[in-house]
Image (cartoon, rainbow, N blue to C red; front, side, top):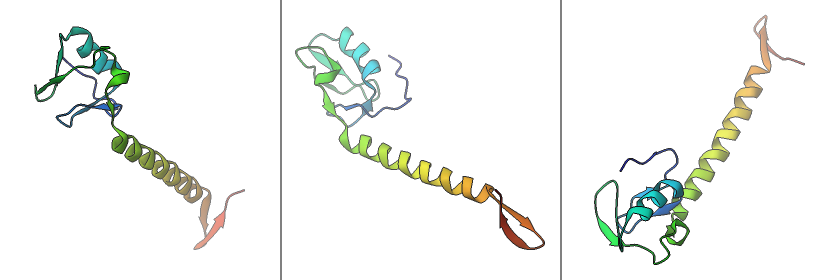
Length: 96
């Protein structure tokens, strides 16, 4: 089973590995009572519904992702501000 590793943070398995819901849903669709982690092969009880929405959300990874998004936006604003300044004769002059 290959998983995307794009943003593996939606849900966390008991072994501690996290996955996006669409990829882990594929694993759930193919399981029969137990779910086998695609990374470490640890088996755990699958939800009765076989629905990824019923797995444990990975709140810590989701919060870390939000912090990174905010930091990235802040850095971009900083870079945009730096780009808006031009050096002329040794003085920084804002561009208008």
